Image (cartoon, rainbow, N blue to C red; front, side):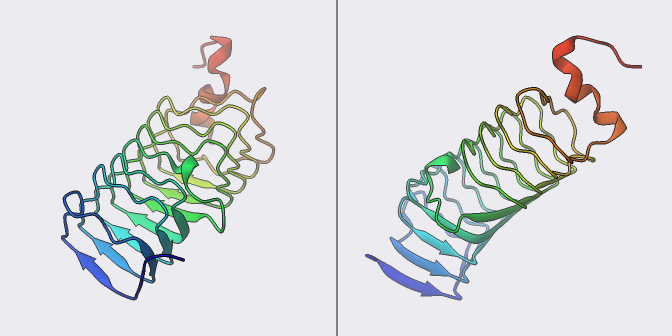
Length: 190
């Protein structure tokens, strides 16, 4: 592995958009109130790291490793997680804005999305088995050939999921969310 090794370090209020993050492996590190906007995080390994109140909009994540990474109160607009490394990919999101991001073909089993905005986010062919969308806004999020088995969308809003082209066995929905499963039929529910 090329690059430096950083362990249990805290990076706070750093603007990485002007000076990119060093290529290497970051284990148990915390990034607090940092700006990564439009930076290239390709081929960097993040293991058991935390990002809090960071701007990660439009970052490049080609072959980036996210293994046990949590994002809290982060702005993550237009990020293509589909390009990151599949190996041990595990992420969780709390109170993040993930609009226009893509998880195309990404395995997100048991991933937790808490209080997130996921407008126009692409979940095409993603595996969301057992995922939780707790109080999330999924306005115009794309679900096609998506596995949503045992997923919890009871408190999610604004989703439109076609049961005929997605696997939703044992997924949990609220009564208020039923229209999001019937959109394509153009029926009115009162």
